[in-house]
Length: 379
Image (tube, rainbow, N blue to C red; front, side, top):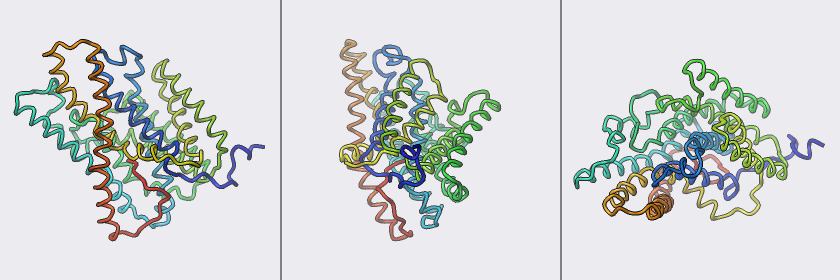
């Protein structure tokens, strides 16, 4: 009876573009934009709508990190374990995926701040643009205890932390290659709980509240949890109907929990169930629109803070000088959110996408090609 719903005998669902995993990627990227923009309106969304807008940032980051571990494990675990993709090759691929766009956005922000200063427009919060913080951020080393990285394009701390996860990924895959799916699952859950308890004992706060300088130690347990979920999904078939209901109930549970505070651990359970369910549902009719939206998600993440700073740097001056009403300010805010999404689509299709294609063409002949089930654009 149980094998009707979950089994190790049936062939598992392959990962594919244009399905729920892609949809989740885009939804998370859009919600991250809303979170970063929530305080820029005439009244912060956390005050005007619900306090959850203030604390959902860490949940979205958790989802982003778990999803990254899950997708990369589904895509690369077999080729890394077999040696078709070496640790150096894997790290090179991932670094080339994230670093060029990061540098372009970082330098664009530098040009914006310098250019604004030359025409007499000083930042409203100059403490966010201290030059001493910039080198660590541009070098993506701020998540490893190296001073710097505050302000500027601050969310890039998670990209810095992920580079450390990319470095660890091949060795984790090879070291755990012989583990069964249930052992993987127990190990992933246990590793996060141990990391969380250690953070409480040594630092006095949970692992998700670790400051930016400890970003790698915050990210690795979540990334590893995503890997464990993927290792489980590799070898355990879940009935798509069961997966659908689990995904719906977990989503409702995650949203409901936010009305009653942070609820970090229960929310983490809901996030894990959502990702596991999304990966278990076959993509019978891939959506080109969802696929394209997911491909843009990294550009949405890396560029939205730059767009926010640029847009509201101009908008706030206009609001103050023209004494614009609150409804007009909300329109300006909504236009800013839409502009962040539009800019990300334009940046991906005109700059980042073509650059990635060029880099892949340049490096393809230098490495041993490994089969991949889908084109990956996940950070």
